[in-house]
Figure (cartoon, rainbow, N blue to C red):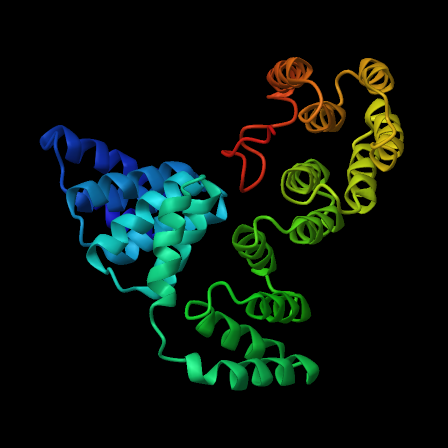
Length: 343
């Protein structure tokens, strides 16, 4: 009866029958939870529906299409921990599913599980089936891009990405193809790219600009911040003007005037960091004491000069992040929210 009500587009009434069914059988099988999930979904209560499907899988583990549905849902919702759990659950039963091995690698790195990331990547790269065709593949991809055959380029990039998961050109063509066809999966391509090339600031920049175009300013700020962190950690001698300009732009878009002024000052200090005096930097940080970038830069600058000051600014940064944790969604915003951003 509950199934009939769902089919008849009256899912709310289906719960009456589901409640009665559970009264008769307090420990129902997977079908009860699948029907509950369908009813929730039709009512627009998506998370309740997903949780019902999760209960169903606990009772019948071989519902592999359902496992993938849940994994993809959590990936789209940017919940890497949950997405990885169901991806690994699937791989336990289908250990050679290349696309899922690839996703497991991506999700592992987003959670800081570098050993797992390398393990999944190595498994993918151990398959040399198409190595001899790599050059021809790149030529074909570039030809499709040049001829604006976006779908063909998208499909081809995605098909062979799992064989060349660290080949930068594959990601470039995937992004170009999805941008060209205005694909709803363009954001996914950006996320995959900067996850694999984690130390490359430019990919955080490109994704952040994409988010700005969508007027998702707080998310863009989180990406630019990660890019600035990467720059200080992996490439401190590079030019920081672009990433700091984008951070400043994000603050301006969010109406954070004080932080906007802080970045103006920080740009000068970054350029002049070799001649910068400790007292000057401390005065500037005191003026903009809540600005995250200044605190991070101070940790970097003092790290080779004054261990005590370095630890002091680390403490200040932790206190600052604790204060702004909720308003800036620091622990949940962006694919790398689970990873530290402290030098």
